[in-house]
Length: 113
Image 1 (cartoon, rainbow, N blue to C red):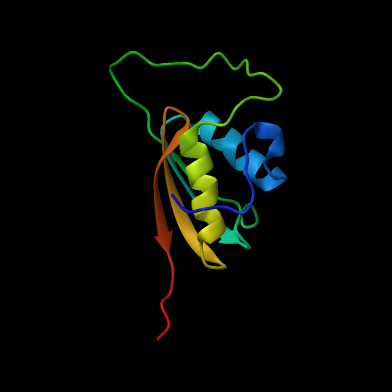
Image 2 (image 1 turned 90 degrees about the vertical axis):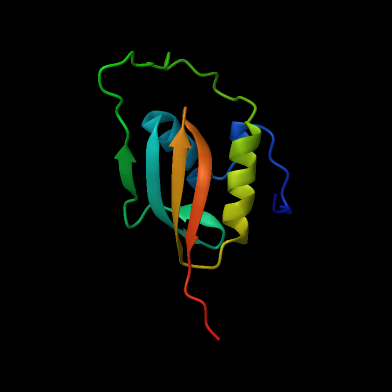
């Protein structure tokens, strides 16, 4: 895990763009989010591409939709936010989401050299 200068523990301590990303992952459930990172923060302009996975022929899990106004962030979310902080400016990222949590992060960057 990449070390972050800021120690987050609960949702309310995240920046507005981080909160928006966390809420988006929760809504997606299963799938992926493709967005840009600027200054270590997810960017919502341009609008991220969201691809949801839908399991056919099986039982669907539907979230309760009831969340406390503030809650502890899971380790996977904390690790994702720390990795985003370490991304190069204007990097395009793909966040794979499972059960509303980040599962894998792909970072696309142009190497100069």
